Image (cartoon, rainbow, N blue to C red; front, side):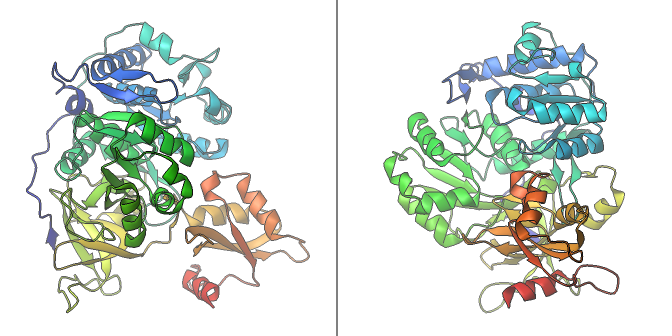
Length: 527
């Protein structure tokens, strides 16, 4: 077993609201918490806490309580922080929804999470409303933050000036957030994260990811994703840094915002690192304010990170985690001292095992090269989820009796203490940091009347990124083209889930038990 090299931290036994806002002192109140680059509007920590309380109070008189699930379909805007923490202030549960989702995908998540309220913004209202009505959420429970007739809006709710009630919950067992993850396989499942999970992960990250009160942190990673939720919305706020929000990624706007707002700390996914390393537009902007860049959500190769770091004059770090870990379990510490191609060391209070997926044997011995044999990474710590919502079967497959979460990722441990991810045991495809479950796309493909069978795997695109490729068995004389198949899928899923290559085959290879033999398809692809 491997242990964190960092000293253990004592995780406070409190709600995420009390952890973030209960510790505000007089010197923090006038600090700027959030900046909207579009308008230049600034929100101080004192104002943010007041807004959080007022929003919680307005929801409380409308019946929202500790048994309520509220869905949020919202891009990165300052109001997200008010709403998110206002809901948690009441002890209600939040399920965050990908802003790119179609009405069908939103409906599925609302239904599975049993959400009875939905918070959104007017540009996303058409798909939000279609989904809400499909599951029976009335218009008066669809809050449109920027205001649309017939729906509550943020200005009016805050204007009521209500005081929230006192709420008592058990931080260790009460579900705070329900992000959706495909876990190690299959369709998305609700990941039950407690207040303690969220508090613990921020507290574990504080000694490792050194954000200070003078930092201006660019919030381009979506808050709806657990990575942005923990390291931006929660960690940066706990450190009293300033968050500069971006509702969507656009390279030129990204570079302009860094320059104009003198951002100092960037949290990114690998495709942004590639742009920083290679795109000619980078030279047109003054990025000298940036001192640190932290990459996560998918593996980043060391050469790209080093090139990007040299080009903008900043330190590059990498970390590892997953929704089920709240999400961080590994990170390169601020002092560095290890390859940027690694994911660093275990954060405080975490233990890990490397397990041979074939034999179940624990791998601890280092070879002459200083590395262990590759094994599946198992992690234990206070940041490990409670389980999957209404899925005891999937929970049992992922969480063992000793509290270890089986990540489905294959890694090696170096004698100097750091880990490197080398492969994935799981079948998930990661496209630009987003998880795509092959099973979800296969189910959709099989709903096409002219498709008899289908399988999906991840393959390398022209830019080196993993993309979904469908192997399709078409009905006789179907007259189906690759373009037809791609258009069919594109019309029903978020953009990142689109099938980007299609190959027609005579039969999908399967085992005797009916499992798709993806390794045979990968071999076919490599041939």
